[in-house]
Image 1 (cartoon, rainbow, N blue to C red):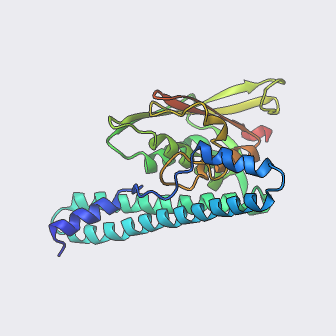
Image 2: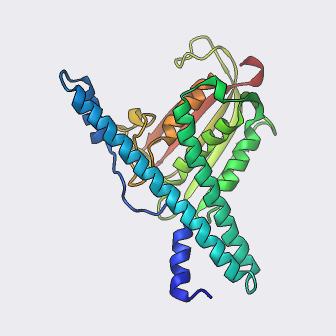
Image 3: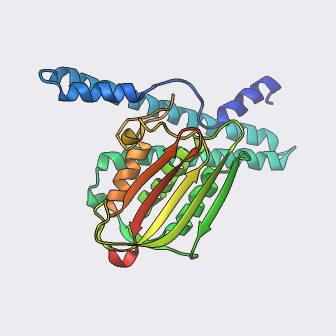
Amino acid sequence: MVNYDMEMNLRENIVLGINTPISDRTLADVMTARAEQHSKGNENTSAEKALEIQKLYFNSMIHELNNFMLGIQNGIDLAKAELRKNKDEAELLLEQCERASYNSICLIRNYSIFLKNGDANHYEYKKIDVVDIARTSAKMLLRDSRINFLFGTDNMSECVSGDEIQIYQLFHNLLKNAKEAMLDNGITIKIDISRTNIGMYEPDGLVPGEYIRINISDNGSGIDKRNIEYLFDPYFTLKKTGTGLGLSVCHGIVRRHKGSIRVNSTLGKGTVFTVLLPLAKII
């Protein structure tokens, strides 16, 4: 038997992303760390700073994993209590457990991909459909009544030659980033997938040819222009919680797949991430 007060606490713990402050790593922290790294005679200080950042990261990862695991266990307990009296509510709770499990796996994948640092021996490259992966990732991550999700594509299928786990992680991280920009009145998140031709003078140094363009946009809180150049740095985060690895991992994934990633954002209006990945035939 689950009493009312206990049930309310359990339901609160199932919600992903509990806002317990762990690390508030802002622009000032990054600039301080970089200044120390480039200053003469401060090698020990830089090493200590790097160690401190790693400790903050591990504490944050442990905190998030603990929240996800607690959410799964609590959700199962509640679902058992609801099965006999409210099947729909039980199914909803089990969906939330599934989402918490999915996010736990993605959190571990982020760290795993980051540690492998592009070692090709750890990955399996094959022909994969990014449209299907985008739809699946959105279905898992964006099941929220406050999110208006839009999806646009020129073709039913668009394939790249890549590692499926990494491409899933790319979409998960970018969609999670968009979701976390949600304002009180909700958010619209849109994925657009199309083809484009890249010429010889592409500023990102891409090989000329046909590419898949992936735009993930939102009308959320936006990003201060002072912070944009640091978004893909490891451990950089503007959130109270989080590991600061999500976008850094995205950057590494895209580069390993011979693509590029850019971001445009206006504070208070929203953000657009644009990813270019070569079609399977030209990797």
